[in-house]
Length: 242
Ligand SMILES: Cc1cc2nc3c(=O)[nH]c(=O)nc-3n(C[C@H](O)[C@H](O)[C@H](O)COP(=O)(O)O)c2cc1C
Image 1 (cartoon, helix red, strand yellow):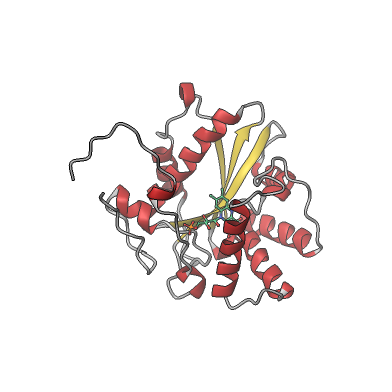
Image 2 (tube, rainbow, N blue to C red):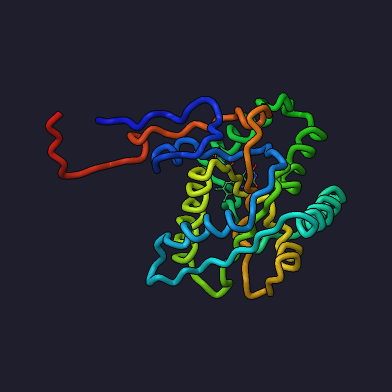
């Protein structure tokens, strides 16, 4: 059985030259350089991502991009809310509640893995909260994206949306850029809609940081594992010769 190469241990800041390379070098970046990303680049990435498939070609996406003063205003307002302990109810459940096994263990391993990598101890609530707050500054990224879906659409359109998001993130890698998709924004959906000029007929799917990864930041050296294919593939009827 052939096996794709594993993800490289270091972050790649050069443009990916193949889909495989884009897949393997995409990581959730959690520290960015201040280098601006022009609107032309954002548009170019969306111009590629829009070719993602969607059932009956519905194309359920709507995106708002922010940079500069409008981004800072949004960051300031959200940070003030989050620091005051205000976390409104999410519009949709990102995680099943309660999260069943084995997913709960994987989620915990991921969270503890990241925080351990950052030197944050399990009981260190202040440092954990501080790291969580970094979400609302987009980890220093100069560009933020908010992805919305028409609230009237059904689950199938959310399947389409995942393809759109991954297409966008892979296209970013081809431009030498990195991303961090962010569900952390979900409690702040009303604030996000207000800053993005969207009305309540649009549900916030997630936020996303976009920019140039800072290769000197330890946070970006965090690597997540994946299950081997043999753990989730079953097959029938194949006649393997080797
Ligand atoms: C829809 C979505 C929402 C996410 N939300 C957050 C988030 O709010 N903050 C964060 O630091 N990472 C977030 N992540 C990143 C995941 O933790 C990350 O994808 C996972 O641990 C695998 O690591 P990798 O992206 O580096 O491969 C999110 C990922 C997805 C797909």
